[in-house]
Length: 219
Image 1 (cartoon, helix red, strand yellow):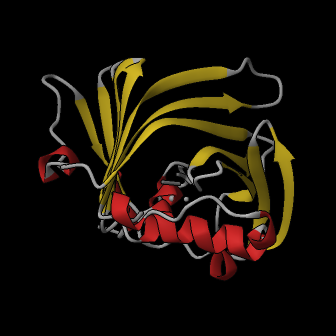
Image 2 (cartoon, rainbow, N blue to C red):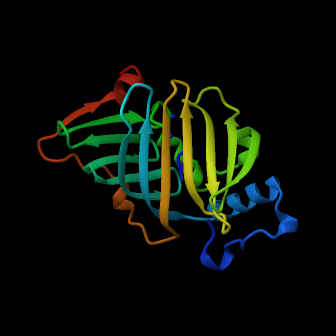
């Protein structure tokens, strides 16, 4: 979810239903989204990721995202095949098949805009983390724009597109450097069985490995 130095619910019996016209306030919508995700232990969803920057061609990638409390995530790419972004809750690992190289960093130190999406699972609190909310309707979804309260994050604005069932279908993350990272989510599954082994990084054969977490701690 995303979202990002982040993204991305209750069990089926506890899912909150669509809002009625009388309940259609911003506050109601935000609490309903929080209620959907904050009760989940795991989440599995397909994603399409698009990166845009001034003066550069847009880059689109896709794959499957697995989340597990607390703070564990696995971005498993099908395009490009083999690419991986993984968090075990303390560290993050990047692997790119292009060049066959991997890097380890402290989760709290990474500037990657995928890392903050861990807040989608069990830590989502809009009023605590965001301000200056704006709402609009777009293509059958409610789009909520907000500004992070913290100035220590690598993005200046987020937009959530929320379905009538309070699923986050799209997340746009706007960086300070005029970059935009967009995620479209499909086939969301709440509380599927997710093996903890998915969040343990295994170095591919012959890959170059850089442990930048040691540098971050001054070792």
